[in-house]
Length: 224
Image 1: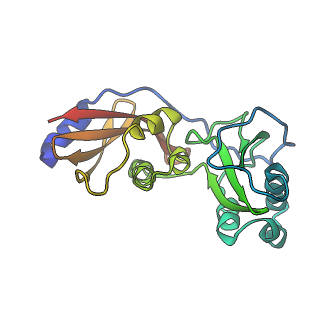
Image 2: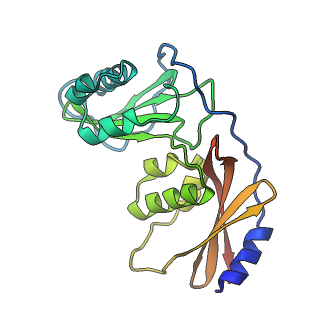
């Protein structure tokens, strides 16, 4: 399959409309309880995951890195302190050892809708967070990399639940067909980023803007 053929396909691929509002800038309101979400693993012995997660969030809100380091790994702390948006306004609960804090008054890129903390051994060992990606290709690449790693939560940082569900229906096979990124082209309501492979092509439809951040909203396939 040639790049020229794919560029033509990108220009004509159908897409779904999706636009994001401006990024939040104000300080976070108090956290409230809501329904729990799905987990990746079983809860660990020790402090309740919710207790640990809330301690980390509180340390972040106070910009207190030493306090954060007492309840989280260095990697988790770095990810949280790099969060580009205002603090989420709702605690969405924990399911197993996965605890979420979400935005309810603003929309941010991705189906994660905020921050997801994975708690293990009395510490937050991993933080997933909504991303502010300023190029369509960055959103497509982030989702593809998450699929390659088999990490749905990482995919939700820069893609909708619909896009992640579609892509993860098939497990990435490192020994299978090779994917080649062919770039992104504009389409009526955003961009379409193409990956070619023997026998067809995959198109990630991206919405957003540089100021709001880009996200993958849907995925389509074309057979050769």
